[in-house]
Length: 88
Image (cartoon, rainbow, N blue to C red):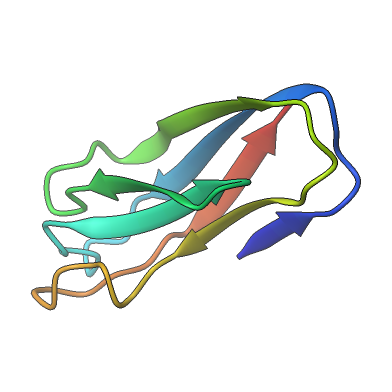
């Protein structure tokens, strides 16, 4: 999980690093941005390495965040991320 409380007036790009062969969930829900937008990634077929999962443009003073939402993810396979990267 990543949270940044002081960014504002930014365009933020979210990336996850997937290389662990045990991460096989076909519908992993990543929640990102300031509004909790859901992005789904098939971890069983995602390429190994950095995967761009979304970009958020927002100009309020709300926190930016990136989390794996276990409730909205498929219950099939293992879920995880080797690393998360946020650029702005």
